Length: 478
Image (cartoon, rainbow, N blue to C red; front, side, top):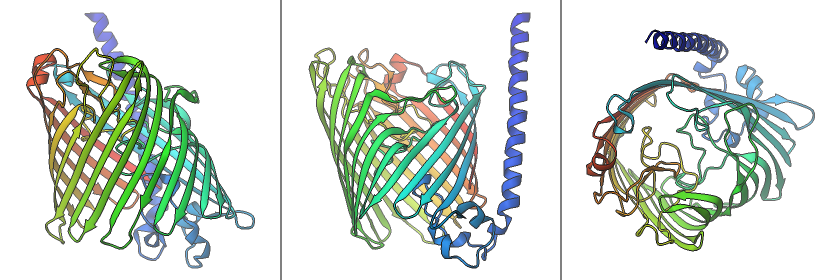
């Protein structure tokens, strides 16, 4: 008992010391940002001329600052550093600190946890005239207080997240190297923003642009996350290739279409059916439009291929629809629905479980317990936006298994709860609340609270307790 108290005190001391160091770092970052970015709160410094920060920082373009004769503040010194001739350098970065309190994890009583997740990323974008561009980004993610083994989804001491060269050839661009990928609704390819560590890929893609259309042809190997120092490699056991076409009609009220083919080869695909070599081909179409106050997004994906000696046939159909009720406070009602195929018969060698490939983290909210495989869900929501600073989102998601012979999967595609021992279909329901406040264009605060009430299936094969998650995060971008 005394030894246990000593260990607890030591761990508590380590956590306290770590938190003290991290708080000092965060205070220094925030203080520095307030000092350097103080002119940016005005209206004459140039920041208001620029678009907001993007999910993919490599898509930001600050070339317009070249001809800005008025702007001489920090924004230009950071975002447009002139070099010789037509060359210039852009610098940027971000920090995210998130504290989470988890209760009754895995729906088990008294299975509690508290943890601090810290992510730091910095990048540099070098433009060598019109034809050549070099983009690089470092990442670091640490976790303090989390029970269990370290996970590469959340921890990585320091590594090269992106490093690619872009060559402009007429209306097209050839990119070679390591980079993030994000397409469409991020149902199949995303940066995985919800986790502490984002994902990237090694390879190349050719981008061909026309006035209202773009075609990407890509070939990549997965960049496997590791928790050490510069220890990532190229995972040739997980290959990705395909084509993604986007057609835009243009205008403020436009109907748009995506059509794509994505192929993957996983040396060891893992499902409740087993762990075998997987060759899978996905053909998808996405229709998305904004018509006055109405916004819609519908996507259909069909998959075929082989799983060991067996055949693959899987599919998903999803739709999102939103209607803005008022203009001033921008109250928006939403309803999402999704059907994702699951395996019909276990042990027959064939596979009907949908593979979401590399989807966004926290697919159905920050409480990432259920992913898009063997699933049916209905997801109503209410979103309130006030003065572009306050964002409040209320939602409630209801989950059922599509096939009773298959289980419940995490958003990553890994099996969460095996399902062949139960004939119950209802998984459970998850209400949630997210409140965000944008202090300015650089600094944002967010808090969230989610509960997952287990349904008949989970109560039969897992646990009876309500799984809850409280989170508070601070994000800084520059």
